[in-house]
Length: 383
Ligand SMILES: Cc1cc2nc3c(=O)[nH]c(=O)nc-3n(C[C@H](O)[C@H](O)[C@H](O)COP(=O)(O)OP(=O)(O)OC[C@H]3O[C@@H](n4cnc5c(N)ncnc54)[C@H](O)[C@@H]3O)c2cc1C
Image 1: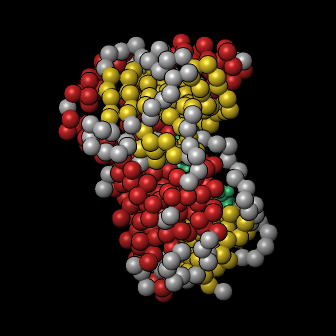
Image 2 (image 1 turned 90 degrees about the vertical axis):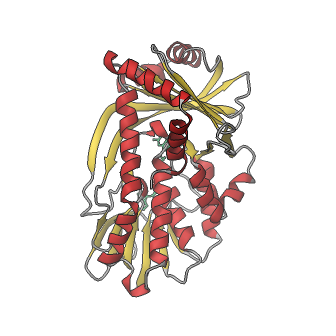
């Protein structure tokens, strides 16, 4: 049987694509290695843009998230600063006439809401099915599970988070030689929606308000991260205080410390015969700018629009894939360049970039049009 679309991976991006296609008259099958109801990944705080909210609203997932206490935390302000240098910028939602600069949600809460929304559709979902490979011919894509039945489709949309399942899509890789140490932090004072992004000699540190606590993303070297993980809670909090400074006040509790390697991986051409990679399978970004899922969500939304606008017999053909690639090129490349540029300008401690960096922050704070352009990029991406 030939499906219209086979989606490999029902993570946040694959599930969004499946939901965006659910109302169409299309035969869609979704395969995910996770068992039904299981959420594999350890939790992390995701910063969602206003554009991401609009997409999730259209799909009925935002209301689902909102029904859970503390699942969504609006970001009212972002305090951006650098350690050991001048320059500070404050981005303020009210100043820009916006309801919020973005929203923090937990990966697990978002995935659970997407899973529930998807379960209510008529889409066929094969849980617990790990895909070994995806191969395309001019006529169809073949999705090969490690065990169980092969699926044939006009188009295979690979959203497995790594692109590992797909042959024929080359990915470039840049290893930042750093890791992100993440965890949850509590302090006595309420966060009032204030997020912090601080550029330090080791790399950026972000504090994202989430529910009753802050989500920490601390960029550092693998060796330093091991030392930090080995500290007891009190020692860790003291090290964070020395590294971050006093602007966020004093944290008195930490939990769930873990590390992730930081790499940039992206496919310049995210397509092969009858196959398209999207989300992290197409681009895995440094978390400094909180862009990864937001760019992936726009991949899913745009792909769904292109698919529903294409006659059934032409789904997955070269013309349709070229149309998708064209529609996504500028925003994908801008997301990659914006994130990589932030890491390079703000993620090192060369003295000759320290003062231009301070100047950039001061200018950002002083010039409303520049600030608006920066906020627009963070909120909606570039088009
Ligand atoms: C520390 C950290 C902080 C981050 N912060 C942010 C942030 O603030 N904002 C933001 O936008 N992004 C952020 N990101 C990035 C964000 O987590 C990713 O962009 C997002 O998870 C990508 O979703 P995805 O669906 O493409 O992939 P994933 O989340 O990896 O999901 C992949 C899915 O595919 C399934 N799968 C995998 N392999 C197979 C297979 N072979 N067969 C079948 N199924 C398979 C998995 O079970 C899973 O369900 C952060 C990342 C890190 C590491």
